[in-house]
Length: 58
Image (cartoon, rainbow, N blue to C red):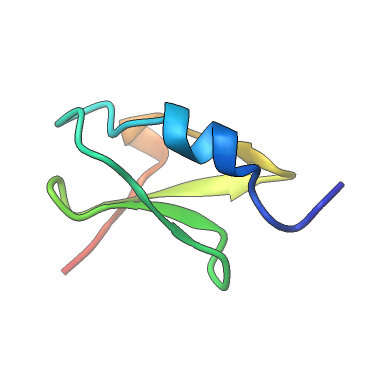
């Protein structure tokens, strides 16, 4: 499976908390919601968009 996230998938996803756009961090394999200060993990190429799985950002 490709290490990069499909651009179409990224464009379709929004933050489940704020509905804001997400930024893709390829190095950490996360989708970042600047509005909610959360980082959602990408596991095996699949974005995990659960708030309970997100990392709180400072």
